[in-house]
Each structure stands twice: as structure tokens, then as C-alpha cells.
Image 1 (tube, rainbow, N blue to C red):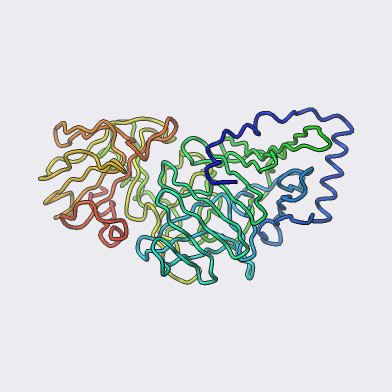
Image 2: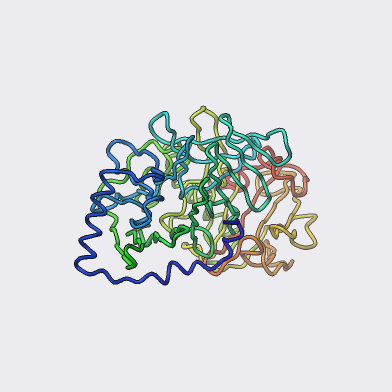
Length: 439
């Protein structure tokens, strides 16, 4: 099966009949009991969770059973934080994104280690060939620009695709036998809606206000279609020392990583974000800065995106460690005019073709001097002075706009540097909280 099969409509989510007779339900119960006792030949087990957490199995080889073995009456809250696809070397956490560490020029893949408790990551460093990265144990990652292909020692391949928020998420997994899993996302790529395998079995994640509320699976057995829904329980969230994931449930229903450098969104951070929202947006705009996204975004979307300490003791910069996101409403779906402060002496003539980025140079900006301001994802670009601000367009240009998710990303750089190459940006970025007074 070729990678371009992603383009084919995944009709399987729609056509499987949902007619379970009493005898059919009995067969389901028997199948679940059998699944709990044994793993069929060719099955690929999920990542091993902490002892108190349930273990979920991928029934890849048992075609007349559900694709995902959910043996608990109620699926544990936060189970998506430990749901992984297993290979010979690691268990890949399917809900997590592949990230690029600009400061060190490496890629990081969240995983569950096979040799220790808790979660970790695989780091890919540049290899001998162009656009090729390798991990310490020989896993390869090929950089193809908007897609990345990861290959493990057992021949399993993972295809990662860049979504509108610039995150690389897994879109397909293919094992050495040619069996495939396609991962299906919402239009903006922020939510994993479900999976379908090459035989047509499906897994659907049903979201509510607090994240995933239930899991529905469909499959065929004896030429009949079956469906079953597992509810997400009200018990304690999955407890693990998750690295590069979201493991601590906050009051907002969102998860905080256990290895976050900053553990709380403080009153001073909130004041800073309000000032930044008034500076760059319209009356309903909200800002996610100071390392945190707005709490109003979907429960499954990251709350904390600041600095994180890896298992090796290194501090890893997050997407918002020294940057901010601006939205038109607390839930991220609203629109807003986009502004920059007056006082710049040079600016871009038009947005860049890839990220719709517009640059402004300030001899003085807020508390600082000699600053370049870069605004990414600018729609309807214009230069219209409005008092002490200048309107530059609206939220969400190419690379950042969908019907459900509208934002702009803003960086501050030291010096008159134009738009630095991606690897150089980490060293030049300025923390937005230091630019403007937070009184």
C-alpha cells in the first residue's frame, strides 16, 4: 500500500453495518474474554502502562476482533496519554506529535521505553546523508519537508504529516507485512478522531467538553457487522511519569506534563497575556503566551507548551517558550483583526509565501531596543495606522487557517535579522513577557 493511499476516501468509517443480535452480543463478549487471555499471532501489543493502569492490545492479526483490545468495562480517563503502537525498539504514543528541537537541531519522538518505567523520547540527530536523521539505536527518520518518514529496525514505517498548526502528527503506520493503520484527524489536525486499518476495522474517539468521553469500534465477523462503544470512566486518570506528554490533569480538564519547568499559570502570566492580547488583537482576542495556551481550547489540546526537562537532564524549548499565539476567542475558533505597535521603521512588503509571515523592525519596542517582530499566519495583509497601533490584517493566513482553528504566531528577535532560518531562531528569540510591562 503506497503512502498516497492517504488521499483515498476512508469510507470504512461509514459503511459497516451496525446490527448486533443477542447471539452477536454473546460472540462479542466471548471474543473479549479470549482477547484478555491471549494475543493472536501477528498481534502488536500497546505500550506497557504503569502497574495500576490497564493495558490495551492492538489486535492487528485477529481480523474478526476489534482493532483495539479494550478489556476494561470503563476505559480509564487519560488513557490516550499511554496508548502506544509497539515496535521492536519502542512503543510510539499515537496521540503525540513529532517535534523539532530548534536549539539542538534534532527531532524528538515521544515513546514508552521497553526497558524502564514511564515515558521517554527518542532523539534523532543528523546522519551522514542529507535529510536523514538517526537515533542512538539505529531508528531512521527521513525529512521530506512537509512529511517525515520514520523506519524502525523491524521494518515498521511511520508517516508524519504537517498539519495547519505546524505540528507533525502520525498519519499512517505500515508494518513489515504490509498491514496499515490510517490515523484520522479533524480538519485542523488538532484532534485524533479515529483509526482505520487495511481490513476496514475502525476505532472512533468521541470527544466532549472534557476530552475523550467514549471509544466506538466496528468490525466484521462471519460476514456480519458489529459495533460497540466503551465509555471513559470517572476514575483516576492514568498515573505515570509521562515525558513529553500531558500527564497531570488540571482544573481546566487539560493535562500538564510532569516534567514541565513551569508548573502553574500565575496571576502575573495572566496579566501579561491580557496586555499582549490588547496590544495585538481586537476586543475579543486572547493570547496564549508565557508557555501556556488558553484554557478554553479543546481539552485534548496542550495547555503547557513551554520548557520541558528531558530524561537526559537537558532543557527542551517548547513551541511557546519564547513566543505567543493569538486567537479571536477563548476557544480558538473566533476571528480578530491583527495589529502591531506603531514605531517600526521597516516592514515586509507582503507576507512570505510559506508561513504568511510579516516582519517589522523597531529601534525601540516596549522595554527593549533593536527588535525584529515576526507575525506568522497573517490574512488580508494591510498597513493601516490606528492611533498607537497599526492594523496588519486578520488572524490565520496560509499555514494556520481552517474553519475551526484561527490563530497567529508571534516571535520577537534580537537585532535587525529579518526572518532567521529555523535553526537560528531559538538563540535570537526574546520572551514576550519581557517586552512589555505587566502592571
